Length: 289
Image 1: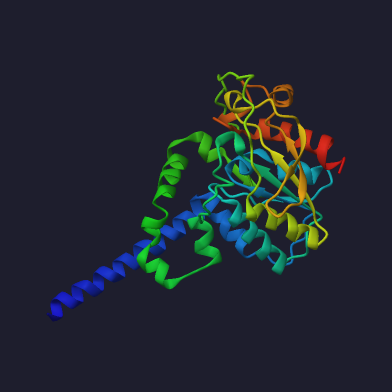
Image 2: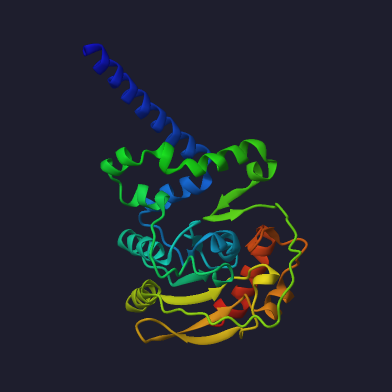
C-alpha cells in the first residue's frame, strides 16, 4: 500500500512538472498565449486607441501603423474571442489604466456569427490569466486545456513563415501570402444583426466614460463579401443606434486589397493587407470622426 501511494505521489509530481514546463514553453514560443499574459497585467499604460475583436481584427488592424501616424494604439483582439470576452478585457483594462480616446471594434460577420454568437463562450487562454482557478487547473490541466497550442508550437519549429511572424503592439504580423482565388457573389445581401447585448454594453460603457467607439466590419475573402453600404446606421440591443463602417463591402475592399498579395489565409489579412486596410480606416474613418 505504501509503495502504491509513493508511486501515485511521484506520478502527481511528474504531472505538475510537465504542466509547468508546458506553460513555460507556451510563454516562450506561443506569441498569442504570451500576448494574453501581457495584456492581463497591463498597469498605467496610456493608449489613444484600443482594438477589440477576434482573429480577423488580430491580423487585420495594424496598431504600429496607427501609432506611427500619431494615434498610439494597441491591438487587444484575441483569436477565438466572443464579444463578451472583449467586454471583460476592456473593463479590466479600464480598472488599471487611463481610458483611451477611442475603441475600435473589428467585426467579423464575413465568417459567420462567432464573435456575436447568441450563446456566449469563453476563451481558455483569457480565462487562465484573467480568472485563475486552482480547481480549473486540476480538472483541466494546461497540457489538455491548451493542447491545440502545441500545433502552433510545431508550426513555429517547422515553418519559416511562422518563425518570422511577429506580434507587434498586439497585432499578428506575417509576410506569408496565400492568394484569394474566390469570387464575389453580387447577390450577397445578408441580413446582419447587431442585437448582441454584450456589444451594446461595450458601446454604453465607452459612452459613459467619454470614449469614442468605431465599429467596422472587416473584409473577408471575395466570396464572403457583400453589397451592403459602406456606411450604415444600425440598432443595438438596448435601442441606441450606431454607425457601422462596412469594409466587407466588395466595391470598397476590392479597391484597397490585392487578392494575390494581401492574404495569409481565407478571410485573414497578412501584414501587407492589414496596413492597407488600417490606412484606409485612418484616412476615411478615424480622422473623420
